[in-house]
Amino acid sequence: MKEKEKTPDVEKQSFESALKRLEEIVKELERGEMSLEDSISGFGEGMELVKFCLRKLDTVEKKLQKLMAREDGGFELEPLEKKEESGEE
Image (cartoon, one colour):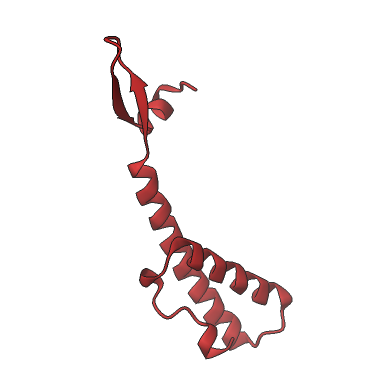
């Protein structure tokens, strides 16, 4: 794995760029042409990217809300989790 290809700082990139880099690492590992040291380094970088992406997704999920109609005809924002917890679709 070339030094310039490594992710400089996982926390300073977008979700999309982290996901793209993770896909690149997976392709490199799947080719099986890397040295053991580079494979281990790539795997470690990939795990950091996975953790970063999962944190980003968790943050976005917590922010998701849906607009619910009230009985009085108005609307209010309701967290998405309430829908999932009640089992409604």
